[in-house]
Length: 146
Image 1: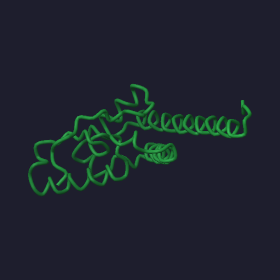
Image 2 (image 1 turned 45 degrees about the horizontal axis):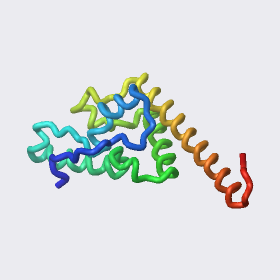
Image 3 (image 1 turned 90 degrees about the horizontal axis):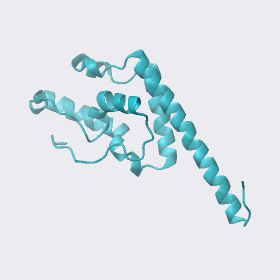
Image 4 (image 1 turned 90 degrees about the vertical axis):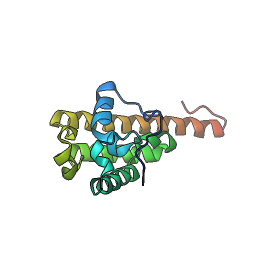
Protein backbone atom coordinates (compact mmCIF):
# COMPACT_ATOMS: atom_id res chain seq x y z
CA UNK A 1 0.00 0.00 0.00
CA UNK A 2 1.19 3.51 -0.78
CA UNK A 3 0.16 4.57 2.66
CA UNK A 4 -1.68 7.68 3.62
CA UNK A 5 1.45 9.54 4.66
CA UNK A 6 3.02 12.20 2.47
CA UNK A 7 6.69 13.12 2.62
CA UNK A 8 7.47 16.73 3.36
CA UNK A 9 9.23 17.74 0.17
CA UNK A 10 9.11 20.71 -2.15
CA UNK A 11 7.27 19.25 -5.13
CA UNK A 12 8.09 22.22 -7.32
CA UNK A 13 11.89 22.33 -7.22
CA UNK A 14 13.26 22.55 -10.74
CA UNK A 15 9.99 23.67 -12.34
CA UNK A 16 9.79 27.13 -13.89
CA UNK A 17 6.07 27.72 -13.48
CA UNK A 18 4.09 30.94 -13.00
CA UNK A 19 1.81 31.23 -9.96
CA UNK A 20 -1.52 30.78 -11.85
CA UNK A 21 -0.31 27.55 -13.48
CA UNK A 22 1.21 26.37 -10.22
CA UNK A 23 -2.17 26.84 -8.54
CA UNK A 24 -3.88 24.75 -11.24
CA UNK A 25 -1.28 21.98 -10.97
CA UNK A 26 -1.45 21.97 -7.17
CA UNK A 27 -5.25 22.05 -6.97
CA UNK A 28 -6.18 19.86 -9.92
CA UNK A 29 -3.24 17.54 -10.61
CA UNK A 30 -1.10 17.03 -7.51
CA UNK A 31 -3.39 14.54 -5.78
CA UNK A 32 -2.50 11.88 -8.36
CA UNK A 33 0.71 13.29 -9.84
CA UNK A 34 2.79 14.08 -6.75
CA UNK A 35 3.66 12.83 -3.32
CA UNK A 36 1.42 15.54 -1.86
CA UNK A 37 -1.80 13.56 -2.19
CA UNK A 38 -4.65 14.78 -0.02
CA UNK A 39 -6.28 11.53 1.08
CA UNK A 40 -10.01 12.00 1.84
CA UNK A 41 -11.63 10.10 4.70
CA UNK A 42 -13.22 7.54 2.42
CA UNK A 43 -9.75 6.62 1.11
CA UNK A 44 -9.33 4.57 4.29
CA UNK A 45 -12.23 2.28 3.45
CA UNK A 46 -12.23 -0.64 1.02
CA UNK A 47 -12.97 -0.80 -1.88
CA UNK A 48 -12.47 2.97 -2.35
CA UNK A 49 -8.99 2.67 -0.83
CA UNK A 50 -7.96 0.09 -3.42
CA UNK A 51 -9.22 2.17 -6.33
CA UNK A 52 -7.65 5.38 -5.08
CA UNK A 53 -4.33 3.74 -4.33
CA UNK A 54 -4.24 2.23 -7.82
CA UNK A 55 -5.13 5.56 -9.45
CA UNK A 56 -2.52 7.51 -7.47
CA UNK A 57 0.16 4.91 -8.14
CA UNK A 58 -0.67 4.95 -11.85
CA UNK A 59 -0.67 8.77 -11.92
CA UNK A 60 2.72 8.96 -10.21
CA UNK A 61 4.17 6.39 -12.61
CA UNK A 62 3.17 8.55 -15.57
CA UNK A 63 4.25 11.85 -14.05
CA UNK A 64 5.32 12.61 -10.49
CA UNK A 65 5.81 16.33 -9.95
CA UNK A 66 7.63 15.48 -6.72
CA UNK A 67 10.39 13.87 -8.78
CA UNK A 68 10.75 16.59 -11.43
CA UNK A 69 14.22 17.62 -10.26
CA UNK A 70 15.45 14.01 -10.71
CA UNK A 71 14.68 14.00 -14.43
CA UNK A 72 16.98 15.12 -17.20
CA UNK A 73 16.15 17.82 -19.73
CA UNK A 74 14.96 15.34 -22.38
CA UNK A 75 12.54 13.79 -19.89
CA UNK A 76 11.31 17.28 -18.95
CA UNK A 77 10.65 18.07 -22.61
CA UNK A 78 8.85 14.74 -23.11
CA UNK A 79 6.62 15.29 -20.06
CA UNK A 80 5.86 18.89 -21.03
CA UNK A 81 4.79 17.61 -24.45
CA UNK A 82 2.40 15.13 -22.78
CA UNK A 83 1.09 17.76 -20.36
CA UNK A 84 0.38 20.15 -23.23
CA UNK A 85 -1.38 17.45 -25.25
CA UNK A 86 -3.53 16.29 -22.35
CA UNK A 87 -4.43 19.80 -21.23
CA UNK A 88 -5.36 20.68 -24.81
CA UNK A 89 -7.40 17.50 -25.42
CA UNK A 90 -9.11 17.47 -22.03
CA UNK A 91 -7.89 13.92 -21.29
CA UNK A 92 -6.85 14.90 -17.78
CA UNK A 93 -8.16 14.47 -15.25
CA UNK A 94 -9.86 11.19 -16.17
CA UNK A 95 -13.65 11.23 -16.31
CA UNK A 96 -14.03 8.66 -13.52
CA UNK A 97 -11.95 10.90 -11.22
CA UNK A 98 -14.00 13.99 -12.06
CA UNK A 99 -17.23 12.13 -11.23
CA UNK A 100 -16.19 12.13 -7.56
CA UNK A 101 -13.91 15.20 -7.57
CA UNK A 102 -15.84 17.73 -9.65
CA UNK A 103 -13.54 20.59 -8.66
CA UNK A 104 -10.61 18.81 -10.34
CA UNK A 105 -12.05 19.34 -13.83
CA UNK A 106 -10.05 21.88 -15.81
CA UNK A 107 -12.04 24.76 -17.21
CA UNK A 108 -11.29 25.58 -20.86
CA UNK A 109 -9.34 28.63 -19.66
CA UNK A 110 -7.28 26.52 -17.23
CA UNK A 111 -6.59 23.97 -19.94
CA UNK A 112 -5.44 26.75 -22.27
CA UNK A 113 -3.20 28.22 -19.56
CA UNK A 114 -1.54 24.88 -18.78
CA UNK A 115 -1.17 24.15 -22.50
CA UNK A 116 0.49 27.52 -23.21
CA UNK A 117 2.79 27.16 -20.19
CA UNK A 118 3.87 23.62 -21.11
CA UNK A 119 4.64 24.66 -24.69
CA UNK A 120 6.57 27.76 -23.57
CA UNK A 121 8.54 25.86 -20.91
CA UNK A 122 9.37 23.12 -23.43
CA UNK A 123 10.62 25.76 -25.88
CA UNK A 124 12.69 27.42 -23.14
CA UNK A 125 14.33 24.12 -22.19
CA UNK A 126 15.12 23.31 -25.81
CA UNK A 127 16.66 26.75 -26.33
CA UNK A 128 18.67 26.37 -23.15
CA UNK A 129 19.93 22.97 -24.28
CA UNK A 130 20.86 24.42 -27.65
CA UNK A 131 22.73 27.34 -26.07
CA UNK A 132 24.60 25.06 -23.69
CA UNK A 133 25.39 22.66 -26.52
CA UNK A 134 26.74 25.42 -28.72
CA UNK A 135 28.97 26.78 -25.95
CA UNK A 136 30.17 23.29 -25.12
CA UNK A 137 31.14 22.56 -28.73
CA UNK A 138 33.00 25.85 -29.02
CA UNK A 139 34.79 25.36 -25.73
CA UNK A 140 35.95 21.85 -26.64
CA UNK A 141 37.53 23.16 -29.79
CA UNK A 142 39.15 26.02 -27.94
CA UNK A 143 36.93 28.64 -29.59
CA UNK A 144 33.99 30.63 -28.39
CA UNK A 145 30.79 29.55 -30.17
CA UNK A 146 28.96 32.82 -29.51
